[in-house]
Length: 436
Ligand SMILES: *[C@@H]1O[C@H](CO)[C@@H](O)[C@H](O)[C@H]1NC(C)=O
Ligand SMILES: *[C@@H]1O[C@H](CO)[C@@H](O)[C@H](O)[C@H]1NC(C)=O
Ligand SMILES: *[C@@H]1O[C@H](CO)[C@@H](O)[C@H](O)[C@H]1NC(C)=O
Image (cartoon, rainbow, N blue to C red):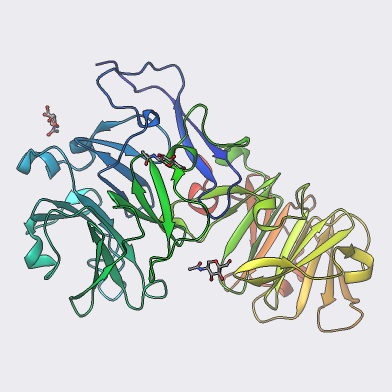
């Protein structure tokens, strides 16, 4: 077997799609060969099971093999989940899901595998004591020889649940009450695997997938779609350009903000990344996917009163956040008209429960009262720091980003009054999804 231990080159392939995952994390082997004995998922594979692990990496299973993430080659599944084959040696998994059970932290984020009538529970890729168990013992009422399984947290299902698929029947297992309700979704293809990804639900069948509503099973839009164009990086499939995840030491962001729903975004060039969805991994999308009118990147972004303000050159775009972002009528407007300032904006942020936006331009910080009409600068401050790229204010204080480093301040007041620049700290992979 040819060794595939070459340097991994990570990039994201971005595809513009409607509602389906729009990119692929792609680990290309720089100069490795392929091994004829390993299956190739770009050939069109029907997966046995798909599940994320506790870190948000998605695993795709077929027979005794597994693919880790949206890119890269297959390896033996017993290399990632040692006991899966040892005990049974049946060479495949029927179904797998990651548990959503915040009431029981000892089970939350554990990954469960179903093989015939047995269930295996893993955490940190280690089999837990007492497993494998009979399915009946761990999940009373759930049938053996399953086709697929997927987590369904409260909010997306009526209670924290697991959807178990067998034929056209869906056994909805309520985690707290350990009870099962059976629904029949004859309009859906028989799912051989199922995945929850970025709050959406996907049934995989053949090399295709169908997106469905987690409560009603309803299918909206044009399905099936080819999984190779959306969930993996395959030559000749997918659309669009590439985004290369930078090294942390080479990171440079344009803007960062957390909206009122707790969604954190950073912006760099033509892409943005959600940082609060780490349960599903970090993913990059084109800015135009969520903010269609903002086509040339951003200089600064801030959130206030269920709206997100994107600033580019002398234009301000204000979007209402209600599930999707909608540009408010009459926008973009000029900076002067909207915020009473002129010139290039480096960074802008609003602290939680405040009504002032702090706008950084070079070594100046302007405070603008967001409750006043028209909006006017109420105060100007001089900063010791110059060349700031982005700024963010949260319960822990303010971070100003400059290249691959950030500077921390206790509060806007502390920043305004500071006479010395605090020691810079490096941006880490955990903060921004960059490479160490
Ligand atoms: C994994 O499975 C293969 C093929 O079934 C077997 O040859 C190998 O010894 C197994 N490896 C481990 C670590 O169990
Ligand atoms: C996949 O979906 C396409 C339609 O998008 C359909 O023509 C094709 O038969 C499907 N293939 C499989 C294997 O399900
Ligand atoms: C399906 O689409 C229709 C029309 O766009 C919409 O009204 C409905 O809420 C959608 N249903 C689901 C489950 O997404």
